Image 1: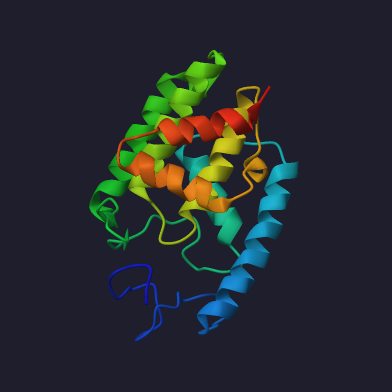
Image 2: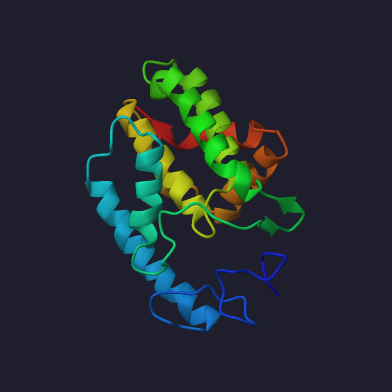
Length: 196
């Protein structure tokens, strides 16, 4: 059963397997390859200095970097509707406009620099929930959004350590709540993993 609820232009015909640079058409094998390569790229990003400011271009570059070894669409905005469960994400024709709106807001807030910690957590939760609702990429949204948040906070003088969350479902559930306009769980989670 597909996690997305329709046939995809990004998949091999008649399958739910994303077209990939390895030409692997077995979903389990592809997921293993994707995990290995994206973890490698994530570890490389974590030893490099983040872009400053962390703008739209830098956000797209994070996605490209994380998935460059696996997918031909790495770093590109998606061109089709996607949904997970009962959640339908933004229509592709609105993605670029909404992404620019989010990043213009972030720029107007000086990329969350010099905020008191409680305000920083609240605003970060807002921006992460907006990016998640947009789901601008065909695959790799969560990883890209989390890495973006890590880099954004590093530039703001904080450390954001997603590895402190022992159960990955906690992150998923917090983002699901935020999709439904309730950022309380996400804010609580962020409060536990952000340090000066």
